[in-house]
Image 1 (cartoon, one colour):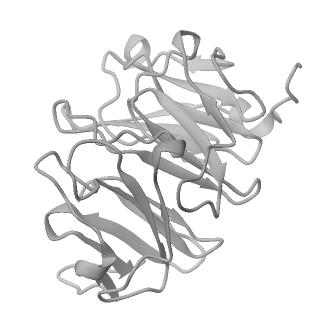
Image 2 (image 1 turned 180 degrees about the vertical axis):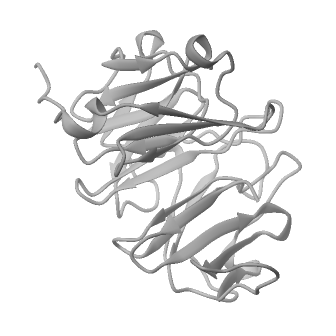
Length: 252
């Protein structure tokens, strides 16, 4: 299990199971040896892993009732696809949408230690899907499918993006992602290209350890939560600006 999402609307926990090529949904109050309420698994799902930790990233959109997962194509290296399922789907079901093809710019898995599959985040307010992999953040229409082009892309040396950690989006319009391998940066959703981050939390400089897992946000307490699995540490930083300050319109 490499990804977990809580659905506050339906009080459910959604996790992926890379070794079983499955997506499991549990009651929010599940405990002990309790079976899932729904399981997405089987050949029609097209969920498949590789020797490089395939399908180890997942995202949930509780507002629109969808689950997203990135998988390698049957050919193996590179050019992966993102599968989208209904939240309530169960059994050996086909995805409702598939996003992939040369125009998407997808080139995953990246074959390095542990592989590199995309982090994803859905922004229901702006109807966007964000895909982060290999130091590039691409934004698509939320319902994009097939060989769709991104609406905009954030990449380049000024971004400091190196593909570490998850990507998240705040209601105020800030894209939050791992950067420099040791920091977390915030980017304006209204800007694209080789843009510098507006804010940066130097995690390693403050706490002595860098990122080592999927960062998340706590909008209620206006905090950034960063794990480091290698050290068994969870770090919490107060970051009210990304929740309270609306992202300004693009300068040009």
